[in-house]
Length: 294
Ligand code: FPP
Image 1 (cartoon, rainbow, N blue to C red):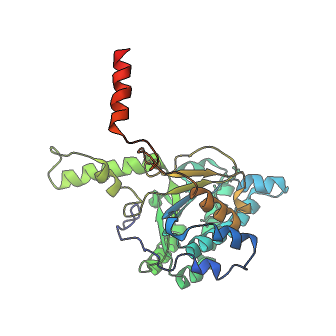
Image 2: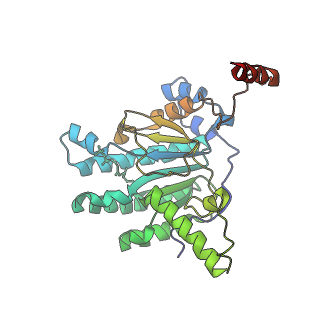
Image 3: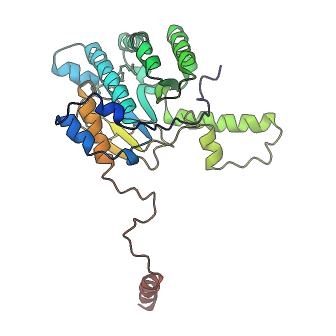
């Protein structure tokens, strides 16, 4: 069972970007105006989300933490729907980190129950919308029933060519790198090329759980925390970060559209220069000469 890797299939490229979104928006509404400001040609291919703030959302309402997680499921639903309608190719959700096992047993059990509930409730719509579900993390560590139901859902959607919904479960960015490096060494050992093994970035990327997916263009974190929390450490090297104070259970279509609109205002240079930067070789020689002469 290749639980820890997602197959290297090409990611679907939507031809009907954004039309499905306008289909459900009322002309002149807040979301419609926001959507109008988004350029279909410059959408992020892959959005990753650290869903945070369920506990605080519940606490502010004097409710048990479980109520926050339950309400967070509605945000998952709204986010998946909006991303699909926008024409986003891949959405990765951080649902359970390898560190979340430190929480009280009752909360951990509740989270797995919710995961199963989500699958049962949402699978028909996921299938109807051609979404392909994948999971990443050390999935062998998941409760047996969750694994069984997840595997069935993954199989059922395996041939879908629509948006990729990738859920991180028992996930740790450092563990992912460890698993990738061990897999590379193991492959080389089995193929008798361990002595000559040379590792480069392409080799590592090909053995990450996200192999075959583009790196996230946009990483969203809710609840105002300014942390990465061991999420996609390799893949977010050049992602645009969007941190919002909104708690995850309050995150809805409008919030997602705000994040995408904000992303489109960014000047992504990937360590290079923007189109307006000075490129004259003479300027550089002059500055360098001046510095040396001093
Ligand atoms: C962080 O909030 C959230 C989680 C650890 C769980 C996320 C799970 C869901 C949204 C429900 C199910 C998900 C799917 C994909 C079906 P927190 O509890 O750390 O909040 P706090 O920081 O306010 O305590």
